[in-house]
Amino acid sequence: MEDHIDANFFIGDSSSTNLIINYLPQTLTDEEFRSMFLSVGPVKSSKIVRDKSTGYSYGFGFVDFQHATDAQRAIETLSGLQLQNKRIKVALARPGGDQIKGANLYIRNLPVHWKETELNKLFEPFGKIIQSRVLVDLSTGVSKRVGFVLYDTRDEAESAIKCLSGKTPEGFTEPVIIKFADDNTKKIKQGPVQYVPIPNFAAPGPMRNQMNRFQRFNPMAGNFNGQGSGVPQTPQGGYTLFVYNIGFQATDRTLWQLFSPFGTVQKVNIMLDHEKNQCKGYGFVTMTNYQEAQN
Image 1 (cartoon, rainbow, N blue to C red):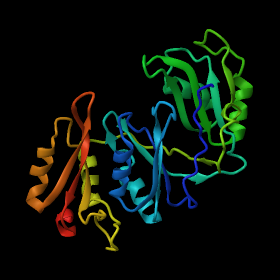
Image 2: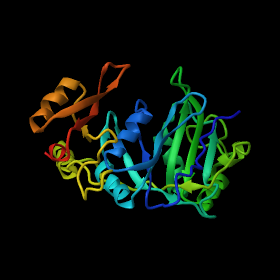
Image 3: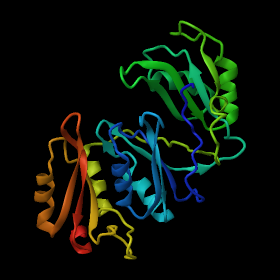
């Protein structure tokens, strides 16, 4: 079976609560992903999109909030957040229509050294690219010479096929083969289609801008127990804060020392990169009550 990325994900009924998150670090776990957005407010569902057979993360995921206000707050506070070597982008998902169905392209015979940057450069002249990916062999890290490009509309995808398929662009050693990705996945049960725009973001500013934004979190509004704003309460009764920019040398002790002056710390959880045996640069702190979390 040929490699594929199924771009047809359905998260919920309301486009005002559904988010796509791009540029996720490879080592981010599903639990960490969900916890990060639970710190904003109640979540109905969350999913990092992975290869079903290997568990390999394709670098993006979806979160469906219970409330539209929390989804908007997540966009405002988490878009541009630096997680390890990635700067994530968060945007509203939008439901599909006839013009955006089948806008996902499957590309073969890519030069072995190509990454997403080169792939985008080739396909950008034909329309707005929503998502792109070059597949690599997990055991060797070598490109499989296969890629995917998801356009904003099917018309743009058709234009790219017409102009590029069968041609030998500069840098190629053989003709590039392009077809609709749906052609590769006809055996896969298709659900309602949802394609998502990735907005443009300004270049990251100095670190103080990130810290100022963290202070505006306070840490994030919306919670589980009906309070008007502030920190969401966990089912166990504590109030969990999402903490980032703590550096790769941080330990559980670091967070205990930082947060204990403001109240009783129930628990801390540093996110570890087990391969490198170091902190991923973020973690979670659970305070006993609402006021201590606000402090």
